[in-house]
Length: 75
Image (cartoon, rainbow, N blue to C red; front, side, top):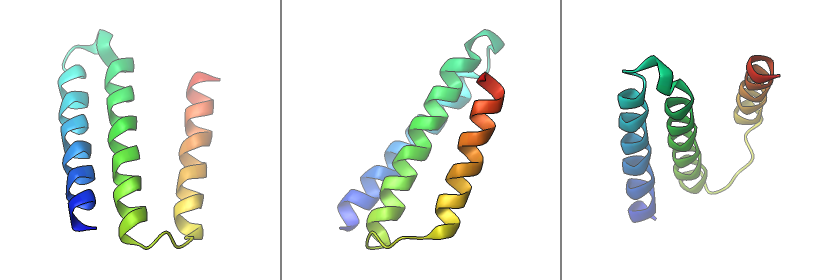
């Protein structure tokens, strides 16, 4: 529904703002990264609901690339 989509996008924007705020101070990098992760999860939820839950191989590939990058950074 439009209500869920709007709330999820707004939450994603709010988490992005929090992430930007944390990144002002370099020692809070991990907190900023976590906030951006939360933002992206909100966006994924909004877009998945708007897309009717249909499988999209390109989205899965982008998620996999992000997961590999995260593993390389913290692995």
